[in-house]
Image (cartoon, rainbow, N blue to C red; front, side, top):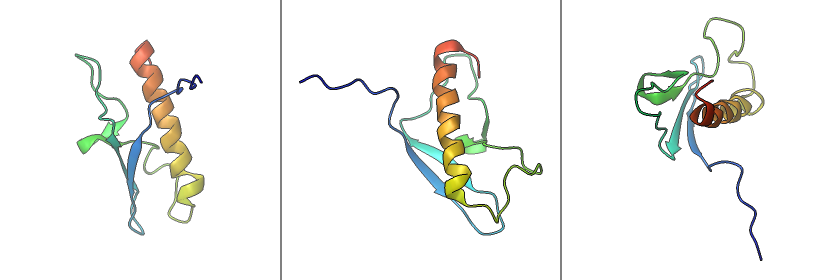
Amino acid sequence: MLRPTPLSEKYTVQLRYTIAKSPQIKVLKPKLIPPEGKRLPHTYHGKQLCLYYPGIVDWRGDMLLSKTIVPWISEWLLHYEIWLVTGKW
């Protein structure tokens, strides 16, 4: 029996959240590797994902992580995979 080919990699993500602070998100597996000569876009120091503009009302501490940050992680990963193929974010 043929198994369907996955549409993307499987990712293991770490989400750390402390009340009154911005969530910190890292991809643990697979390692995020930019093409040679390119910098990994939309990340902070330590390859933490940049999901929104801090200071702009995209995310607030009273919002559910499951309805904001988790879907934004999925969207970031989608853009990452497209960027690897096309070079455009």
